[in-house]
Amino acid sequence: MRLLVVDDNAKLRQLLVGLFTGARYTVDAVGSAADALDAMAVASYDLVLMELALPDADGTEFLRTIRRQGVGVPVLVGSSVADLERRVEALDDGADDFMLKPFSSDELLARVRALLRRPPAMLNRVISVGNVSLDMKSRALRVDGDTLDMPRREIAVLETLMRNRAKLVAKRTLEEAVYCFDEDVSPNAIEAAISRVRRRLDTAGASIKINASRGLGYVLSERLS
Image (cartoon, rainbow, N blue to C red; front, top):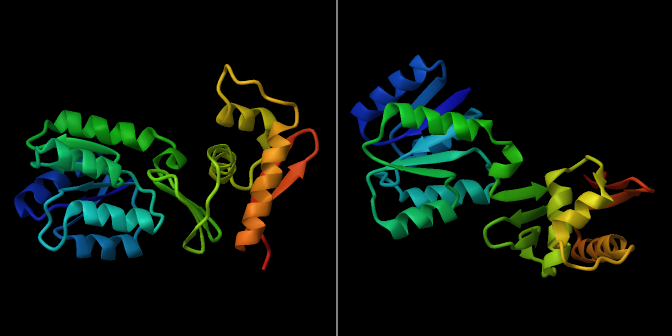
């Protein structure tokens, strides 16, 4: 597992590198948002630990930047910023966890382990397949960057298929993602929803398609160019 530490405090960076190295992680450490972006452009990380107050950018700006780019790496913010509003903003902008400094080494390592256990698809703030993206915070669906209006249930259908791209998704799985326990669901409700989603995507010029496997379910994939 490879971690990236982003903090402008050189002494703390050194301490964190020692802590994570001792826990048998591979660690890179940088002191600015620009250096973090450069590091992420050339290496693949399993987790980022970052401070909100960076010398060249606000931490929430960094979070928004990587999430807009579709980077789903888990981010643990370890910061001395105690303001509740700022902490909520960081979590809404893409952080997966938040710890106030000073923090316990044992708790920090435990939170890192917990984040690394989570499935990658659950960490992504923006799901992208082809030229289609879905922002998990705003629920905004975009095709080539242009917003595509789609009702809640159809977005739920598409989200489930995008999370499981190239995999067969059973009709029952889609029903469970869309409908509550007390809702009456007609036998062809999912088929009708899939048909509407296909039309909307085709009209918008989406580069993805939904194929049906009779009696089994549906598969979302990218169109061949």
